Amino acid sequence: MQAIADRVDAMLSPIEQDDDAAVGEGELNGDVYAIALQEVVDINGFGAYAGHMAYSAFGGGDAAVDGLNDGVMDEVLRWQHLLFEVLSGYKLVARKALVGMTIFVFVRFEHLPFCNARVSALGTGPLGLGNKGAVAVSLQLYGSSLCLVGVHLASGTSNTLARNEDVGRLHERLRFPDARTIPGLVVRPPGPATIGEHEFVVWLGDMNYRIRMADEGVRRAMTATPPPLAELAAADELRFERLAGRVFAGYEEAPLLFAPTYKYDRGTDVYDTSHKKRAPAWCDRILWRESELVTLLGADNVVELGRSARNGAQARPEARRGS
Image 1: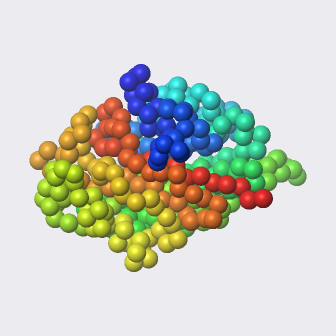
Image 2: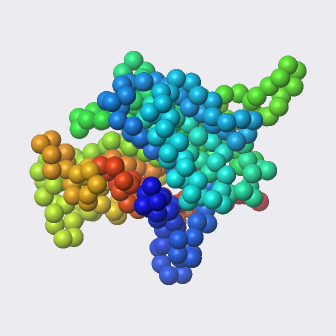
Image 3: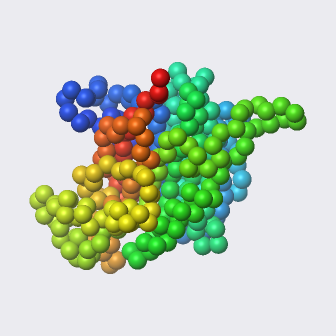
């Protein structure tokens, strides 16, 4: 457990762009941390179980549990414990779990008087089940609205259209609850109801977009020293879909200057050698809606965590409040 906690610590540490920009080594200086996880449990082992677990520091209680079985709950709480170890200077203000997806949002303690959070989720898997879809947090911070969407899109090399449709469905149908009320009195003012109504939006997670090259060609390219990342990034499926205006219109993404995050032999840095021989791809992505108040400080892939068969991605956008 401690080894994984150390890796989480490294994952959340600032991305150093140059000597002048570097903060203290290992210092966590962000104001808000959002951690989105997918497949925290083996979906095949637990079945397509559409349970939820939600938590808000502003909801007056501990986790509200609806339908999550013990195995899923145990894994979510295990990750929460690891994050508590690393983010000791922060408060968990929101958590949402849906089958194998979970999102955690931590805020620096000094910002808590000016922060409010709501959570939501939507399944886009077959029959609307939650093995695919999104878990999301709507954060009101100093009067600005931020939406953090942890996502797991349709898998499969040929399922580009399904992935695009998942994004469209989530944009359209995922909604956040209204303000908590008692008869005749609004306890909190309402916030944005949909993803698109927020001032700032960040999508992060396993988007499952692949590289439009022959599988063998991708695998061969990744054995080169160094691998031709620019050539592979030019063939990235999500890049094509965005340029064609079919998905994530108006969103930004950092350059793909890191190795593909999918898919590794479990517990190694070796790409898939199983009989399936899945081709490497940048499945794990972070995109944000462009704003003059948001600046990207850096992006990278992150270390493999324990039992995972893939690496993740991290980005560090900086949001500035207007005067």
